[in-house]
Image 1 (cartoon, rainbow, N blue to C red):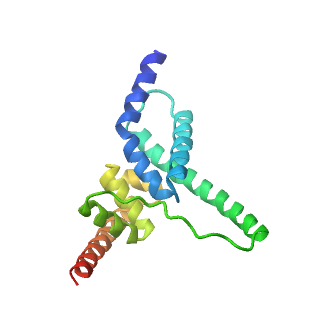
Image 2: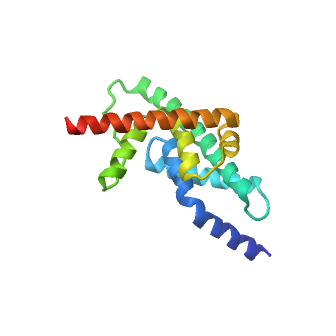
Image 3: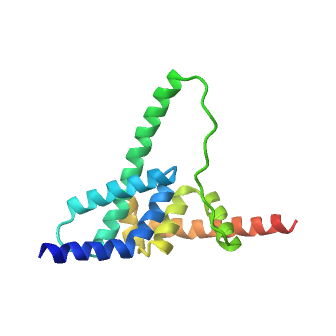
Length: 171
């Protein structure tokens, strides 16, 4: 029985890991943090969900990613404040944002980075996470109606940035 359950979790992780990692990247400041947050969130998910994975596990995993990212960010902010008190001169911040090779994906990712975070996370969960607005609402701890409106406003914002960027490229 345990081997069957293990195989089901392995299959579930293989199917959803890239989507979970995408959301984790959006919630964190760098790739290493995204990997750490995803690992912490998956451990929390496995500890709280007994039995075989189902559709609810995906929403729980997204919720846990968001919470772990918040916890990590708070911890890092506290550490940074302590270090700033000790060190007056801080180096230039490194950009961890990797862009894909093709121009369309690059333009989409650049435009997506300009969309406010509260809209961006709903768009990511809806399109790439294949979540319903009800599931998004539970993951982000907002109402399904708020999730739907953030998706609508976020898509309008994304379209505006893509159109603006295309005009700037032609100029």
